[in-house]
Structure formats: structure tokens, C-alpha cells
Image (cartoon, rainbow, N blue to C red; front, side):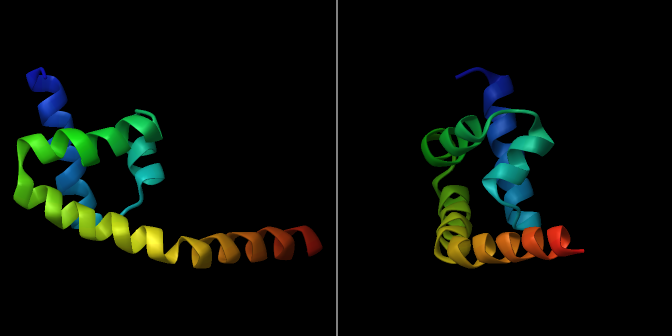
Length: 84
């Protein structure tokens, strides 16, 4: 891996830990695809810094556990906006 990729991976990881943002939000902020962010945080970060990986993994697992709630909230907002 090049230094620019390593720097991006560490920047994404630190930003996720600091803000608790989702993979989708990180993709928009760092101007890369969701797949790239996911690969960065799961595969590349594991090779670079295991301690940081463990912290990010906890956040990703939390997002996975609450995604059904977030999806329901988004759908509710969508239909409330259509009704108005």
C-alpha cells in the first residue's frame, strides 16, 4: 500500500472514532465509494493498526445492530414529507 492510501485509511478511522459517522457518510466526506471505505476500515486498517481497528470495528458493529431502526426512521420521515 502507498502512503496516500495508508494516510486515507488512518484519517477515515480517526474521523469515524471522533464523530461516530456511518460508512456512507464517510464515503461522502472523503470522496470515495462506500466499498472503498469498508475495505479501508476492515482489511487495510487491520494490517496497519490493530488497536485502531478494534475501536472502529465496535462502531461498525453498533451501526449494523441499529440499521433497522435508522431505516425505519428514514422511511417515516419520507412519508411524513410526502403527506405535507
